Length: 402
Image (cartoon, rainbow, N blue to C red; front, side):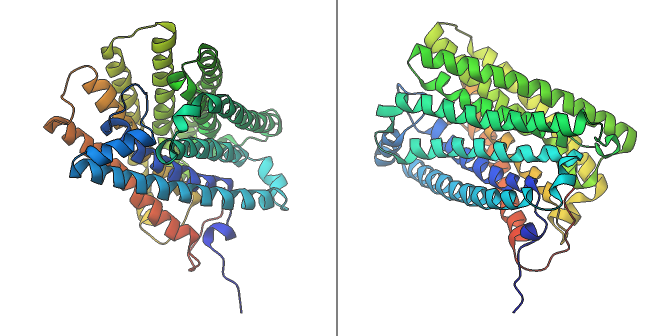
């Protein structure tokens, strides 16, 4: 009997790590329910004890939200890890294949950075799982922060090594194909470093030990600055490529990579500001947070509009999302909606509520929160749809990886 494998297995490319990334990002969207709806007095984030207390004493609506959040966090973290493990196995085999040498000398070599990007996302997702499901974790949290910083430093080292290899083998060697650079795919390394930076910034917002906070601030700033420089240069290069040669259809969804990039870097800055406030007495008025989140959303909607306009003209949705064709680049569509959902919650709660523009849990609050939840639901639907397309064993007309 002939063995049938999935479309993803038959046409594997490193961008499939974005399937793991999207699932991990969705676990974060469910944590937003707990982050901003569950009281956590004296702590920057809710932990198991806070959630349990809110469930026992809260209303039916609170209990329902907690159940939905817990199921969503657990389910999508499992999906995240399952996809990560599958990708790591496929990636190892791919690196030993005959076609890898040609791949490593092409523009597509930068897509290998999807691996450290997914690794960093999984570490962030596991940290959330620990906060939500592990009793007493906050009692030993200070011991975990140095470990987390070391883990993220190792992931950063993997990413920087891959970037150095890409620069040496493709850019410096002159094998980079400018005519095929009509997208923001080359910003992926910057996105990977930004995901590491936001993980490194967590201790700054949560630790009470000055040395830990300072280390977190410095490391996350170093990596965050490198991420910003790299992504900015890659985006400008992609814009020039599109002006000269048009948008590359198979990776057109990467035109919206700036949306998750802004969310990740924005959360990094918010965490750093919290650490500066609590540990170093650097106080910023709530209106500054409102303006920061508003500016980030402005950039996000600008690039979201750019990406959606190009995808509509090229008929990308009808072919690769709704239709029967598959392209690994379609997984890049999940990230913008996840990012908008997360940033939306921060804009509402840290920005508008923090600056006393709207009342928490008032009618305006829920109207705006509904928009953030709608973005989350779009991302969920897209993950299930794309997974069915790419990981089903049914025959599908596949487009080879770049």
